[in-house]
Length: 224
Image (cartoon, rainbow, N blue to C red):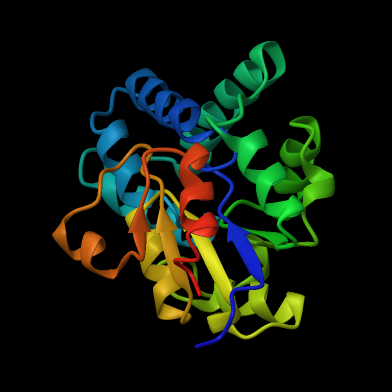
């Protein structure tokens, strides 16, 4: 069995509380356009990159309005998001500081694999004051196939010069868990917006209530 040398984190819903903000913005944007189901389509898109997300949004809302304008919806949602981000900032998820500090002190390499575009990942991680914890960032605009495909995790492992079996992923969404497992990583799930179904429970290595509980796995040597 390979020893775990690195932890690769999703960003949205694991490191930063962006998903609850995005969900709210999608709901409001849909409402303003006289559409329903902003919450439902958001849940389906969690973990996907922008290209796949746009296809899903277009298909979903076009069934309600034949003249649905994807650009108009995206602009509304993005504008709402940045107003909230500018005025209130993005909050870190519970246990982030403890988890990152603990793993770093234990000698693990840390990285990020996020479906979000690189420019936004770097800005948001830096604004949260946690940029220096991470060695590499692999982002949604750098892969062809988004989560649940394993491409992003394979690239993240390669960026560290490690094999997938030498890395553990930390994810909050079913798509993220599927992506990590497809790439050959052990995946710890810390659910945020979507709770795991029986299938996700069966493939996730461990499901934790918060990042504050990561030390129990590492301390007990469960990953190795």
